[in-house]
Length: 114
Image 1 (cartoon, rainbow, N blue to C red):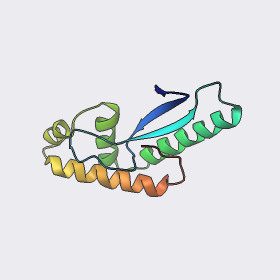
Image 2: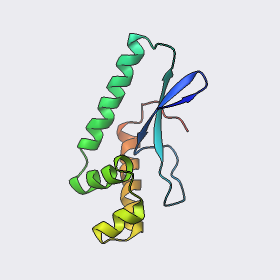
Image 3: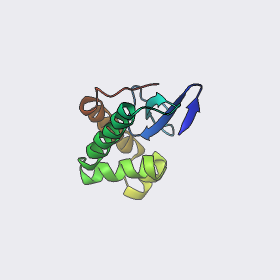
Image 4: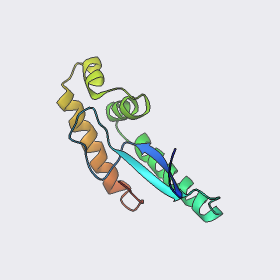
């Protein structure tokens, strides 16, 4: 979690509004909430949003879930993932873009920030 002035951000990998052009850079989704003792409504909403994100990731195909896990939770580069799976880096990038697009559709009502 990082602090930005009066707000704190929870960084949740895998989804963003803009794809980075550099293959080594990866997009992230940031859910913002006030840092000063958020009320129960805000805490509940944040937990629900996190649950929806976890559910979305669990619903991915096994290969896509594996790539998402490696890239965002294990912090492997796209090049390292491609080498280990014996596919091109472009193939990994393409899969991640498809997952991100699907995530935008499934989670489009969540609050996204840049």
